[in-house]
Structure formats: structure tokens, C-alpha cells
Image (cartoon, rainbow, N blue to C red; front, side, top):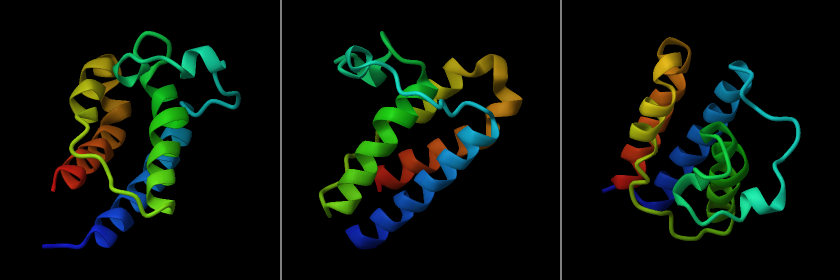
Length: 110
């Protein structure tokens, strides 16, 4: 069984790769959404943010905070199945990003 430290390191590397892929796709925003949009209580802030925005402004910062503070990571988030639906029309372009999200889901569920 791999340690929590190894899991955190694996996730940290995946977060870097996700950010790089969002930037490569030009899906990385230069300006954050408003505080109201970020305060959504809906899963993935689906009522106020795009999935790309949620990854950039909610998921990545929260996961980095958990890792930096040596806090417990969540279980499987189920991000990849949502991404497959959301980006179905951009399947070819988003294939690498979805693969990274699959890896995150698998690693958090391990």
C-alpha cells in the first residue's frame, strides 16, 4: 500500500499537468470569476462556472491547499465522467485533459 505522502505527490504532479493542459487548450482564464460564482454550493459549481473554471479556481487551489497543509485528500471525485459529457463536442482536443482527470479520480480512489 502506498503512503498518503506518495498519493499527495502523485496528485501534485497531476495538478501541474492539468494546469499545463488547460493552458495549452487556451482554457485557462486570466481573470477569476466573481466571488458569488465561486460561492456556489452546487456540485462542481455547475450553476455558476464552466468545468474549466471550476478546475482552475476551485479544484486545483483546494487540492494544492490540502497537499501543502498535509491534510487528508478526498476520495474519488468523479470528475472524469463529468468532463467526458461536458467536453463531448471537443473530445479530440480534451482527450489528454480527460485522461489526467481519470488519473486523478483513480489515484484519489486508491
